[in-house]
Length: 554
Image 1 (tube, one colour):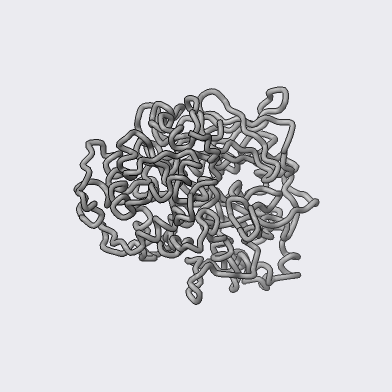
Image 2 (cartoon, helix red, strand yellow):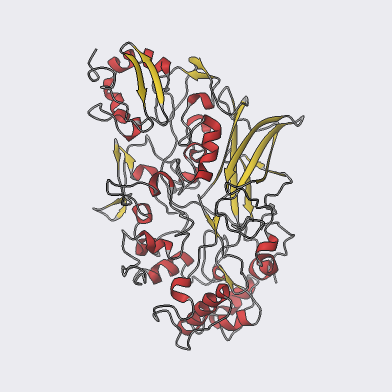
């Protein structure tokens, strides 16, 4: 079989908040960073959750074990450090008190990597040559294009060393100088899930027979193989000439499948890569003969299917379970954090997966490029508004706005794209470095929150100026997204800024100056004012009326 250079480039999923703003040379206040180091190190996973096929790859594979770790380090002058140091990653004890230090012994992916990707892999080594986190540190490399340190293609699984599951394994990233002195450390999560499966409808003897092959259920004794064989049998019935029509194209890419069909191929001991025929931007250089892309095939085909749990069409825009039927899911909770956990006064979710992505038929459109045509931050965060859907109801497409205060970078990472996971802003930090990974915007799961808590002493968006600056910049609008510093000095010195341009305060403090979600205190705060001590609880929406009678009051 030919070598298949399918190094994954998992290009982004949904988008939520981004970074922006400038800097200042005037300084004030002393840093009170909780890290204890003279450098600050941020590290993150790019997607908020990586999916893999589970522990069995012998029938077919959608996605292999593949996770991405990115990091940036700043000195306390606020400058990125891009050379003269070494960054490593290693396994860290999970929040469950357990360790995840190996992968090869937990899945048969390594037994089938040759058939699936044309390469024989060493133990605990992924498709890019990067290794599973263990107690032996492994180096990250510096990416000059994105100005971050990276280890892409980490083959981590959601299985602890004792066999239990943990969808949020931790790694420790360590930065050292050339003499081996530790400059900074960071603990972050590499979320991974095996909940990406099709069992609800395709397992043998499922409650509904809608997905039952004409030839009957396979009834394989292994539940991890059973639903996959049922899918192959159904695929053969609907597309009986799929292999024979594309034999030459498949063989040119190194795949030799049985002309009798996909079920026969798998029964014969050859594992099938779905992307061998169905192009996927998650697996570059895949697909043959203009066969419909994988995301269009799957989402387009299933949009009209009725959810067996609640009776709603999978295309229903308010049905988060439609996505969780196949994507991680009921246990993993891929969508979490500021968007996923948002509730109304009755405790109902105010945002669904579809709030950003649109319904299943939209995701399955043949005009859409999977992993690339994704929502952006400004579709919801614009002009002082916080929309609950990125979709413009007038056009049924992504909302197009002019306001760029919270916008992702245009033409990033390529012309015509604007992806959160590649965007950067204040101090050239990546948006994910401060706001958290896609799907897991701070504050999120306990494992997600560890890093922000380490850096600034509390979970949530990394927004304490002192976390990165020895002396907090004295500025009015030079912070991220045009923000001012938060601290005693601003309380004492903001009068001039407010009087000279009161309207600029409305961006965060609301049109009525009575506070908004953007002025909410990230943690408990106390300030000394001319009206006495003022205490603000976490979440309090700071307003001009907290201390005096509005923006024009004394």
